[in-house]
Image (tube, rainbow, N blue to C red; front, side, top):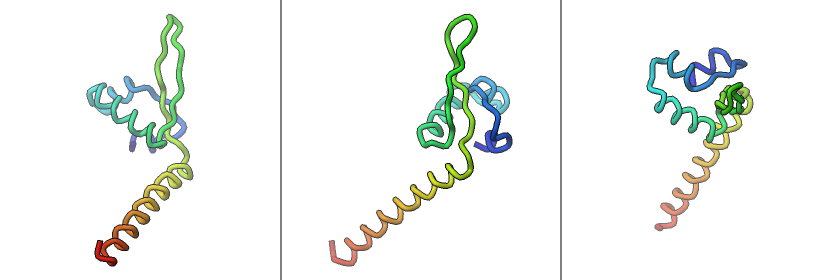
Length: 91
C-alpha cells in the first residue's frame, strides 16, 4: 500500500509492482486483490494491442479510504457493545 501512497495518481499493473517491490507476482496479485476487495484500490482494465488485457490499479482518495476505515472501526465498536451487553446481562 505504501507504494500506492507515494504516487496516488499513478496507475500500475501487478508486474510493475512485483518488480519494483522485488516480490513474487503471486504474492502481489493476492495482496492487490484483497486491497481492491476492501475498496482501498480501484481497478481498471487495460486492453492490449495483440489481444487480451491486464488490470491496472490506483489507490482511492484519502477521503474514501478514511470512510472505509471509519466503517470498519464502527463495526468493531458495535460488536464490542453487543458483547459487553451480553457480559453485563450474564449471557
